[in-house]
Image (tube, rainbow, N blue to C red; front, side, top):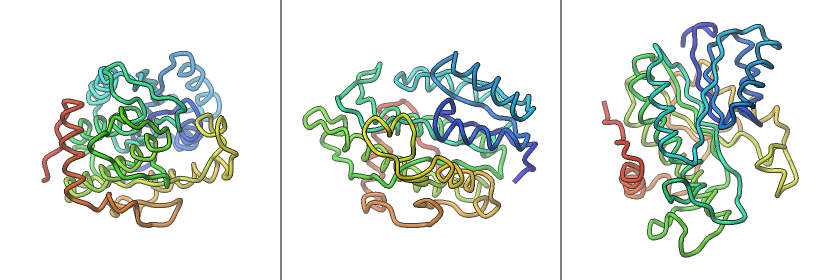
Length: 275
């Protein structure tokens, strides 16, 4: 991988929680950071905070609300114009919702924010990542996983906030495995992880008692971003720092093919062709 000060890294969901703490860690290396969030004011505050703390002036902020597919695509358009992209950290996400909500396009909101945003950005930025290789995609997923019921992916007939969250997180891991296969040989590695359990973030504390520190989760994400080993290892799912097995559906090639087809249909974004 290129030296830290020469890297360009996109972090989604960078204004809170793991994303914000990860931005602090990476800004201190001198890397160029493209930081995403949905609030312009939080973005301004974050940039000022990072510049004051690290002296790094290679920082930019991109506002996009992932409840809108249009805004996710617009973010991909803007990032796609960069000269290079060394790391894409798909970190933005929602927690367990108490009621069913829909996106601007009428899709179940958790599935769109937690999974379809990852699908769009990863697929659309794959050419830029390939040109910038060696490069990496890091998907911040969860040990909370549930098989997707393809008869009711949008959960219109059996809403459960837990199912919505867990199926979206499993979908991220299924995408990780597919992208790792498609991009094999390009110099782009694709890995997913459960960073830590019930960290004290805003998507956790409204429902659960924190069990892990934010520092633990950030350290585990940071490892996939910077450690040399993960410039070679790809298609992994890790629980914290340990490579482990995801839900069985992640290894079902027919289910993964159905998910790819559905994702293409819902987003208008084709899956990258294998090299």
